[in-house]
Length: 209
Image 1: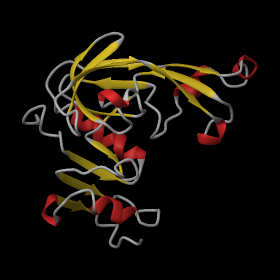
Image 2: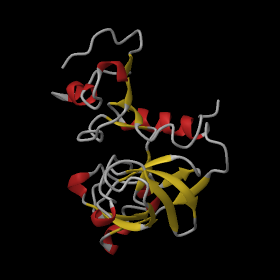
Image 3: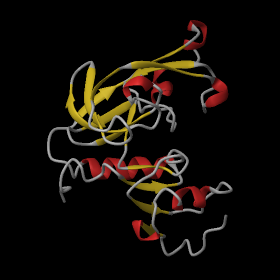
Image 4: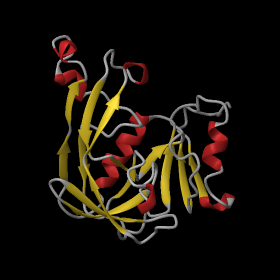
């Protein structure tokens, strides 16, 4: 199945509670965009050279989090992406800005902003360094990751969608929402009830919140 065009997901998103489900959905829908997949591999290292002995890079590569780009970032031209940091607020590149990929270079991604006051502007996104503290992740040491500060945005977690207004939402609940008010956040991302579709597997018969 191919998606209609690059603008199809400009103001649409699938929301779900967990990052693991977000990743599965994004990987599946990426294959629905025609063209070649470009893979970007991050560079990871501990902030303290002494801890590098006990924390090999292979472990750092496997650490994932909603506020951090993946070690292996796969994109195609036309795919929707979302920024994960305030890169250049004056240019419209704030945390959570949605864009559509125009071209994928070795050291820069060209994309068009798809929402907000800078909608339609073409921007260049470089790789940046993310510093992740041990208190903020599953890793017992502070480490840094150099990667493009974006994620695919076919789907996102409900928490990440907070503060955004979308034209339509698909709410996928393979598990119970696990934080007070989370269901309200998901349902209030659209202006009208008809703009949201809900999918709940048979084994999840009731949402408690």
